[in-house]
Length: 419
Image (cartoon, rainbow, N blue to C red; front, side):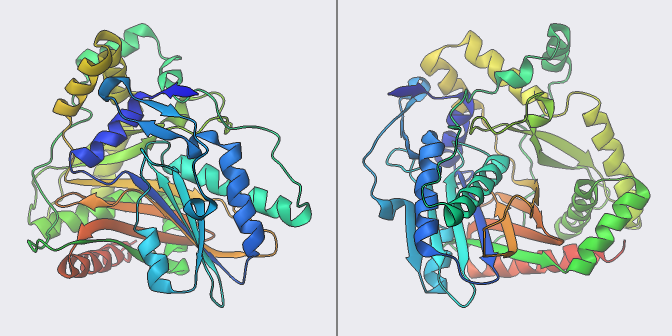
């Protein structure tokens, strides 16, 4: 059976062809002890039957692309077991292939304390979606431990388009967003993160974990000053980048990701799709100002965005394009008009420890991050689990790039010590 491709399927597909990123999502889970290999293997299989798009293949045909059911996969393509950390890391940095499938693959590292790596095609979902699938996997695993015949009651296979996000916005507001507020997305940023010119590159995911006390301090600071964790982390990001790039007092634009499920009345996990958008936050950082002064400017900018349908602008533009221009023409216009930002940030949020529960195998830590970027593009991702925050940067880069990013993380740490 065939299923038409949605607009964000096209968009994520193009991110690879235009040299922005490899459109993959990553989740790594670390356990306190061992897991049951056979139960985990079965849980992955049950997950793919419960969320059918994970085993469909993508048939690329420009503006007339579609997904198609297939039964051609071997279990080894979905799930593998390794006992070597380097092989595990190589798996974590690897890709799914949309036109061959499957759209998810899982690797279990056997050690004194096991670890699990999940790689998923960003075309089928976003950062929230991989969290939803990970929760579902843990629920299936836990139920299979108790009952080997367990099967979830519901199949996750609803409508995948984003127009349900727009359905509650008045027509006049859509008009104003489209024609009066048209500088909210798709902007190119001239500044680039310092990277090595060496041609030989390899994919890597560099992570930096904030110590629990530091994360606790951030949460207390946010509560005391009525700001969000995202506000604080974005402020640290602005301050570090402004210093690294030597742009004292000059405007810096940073696109951040927005979960558009905020506009849905029904937020149940009934379909696996992309419902992320971007909004550009612009501010200046003066050399003499302190953290709280920069934070005030970031918060003011965020407040303006939140009061003006945060993240809706790109959705209306894409919806208008694909309604007016059909098929291949819309796809060609989209491809030609894409301007990928050189610097951006995504806060994937909290991985809920109550939902990420594997029966008999407590999770010690977990993080989620997005696609691996191609130079010169740079993104910091943030996710949290059980009192720990993990920062990550994904890149096809060199050893010197890794060193530069390590110094960047130290600078972020230093900024956060000020609060």
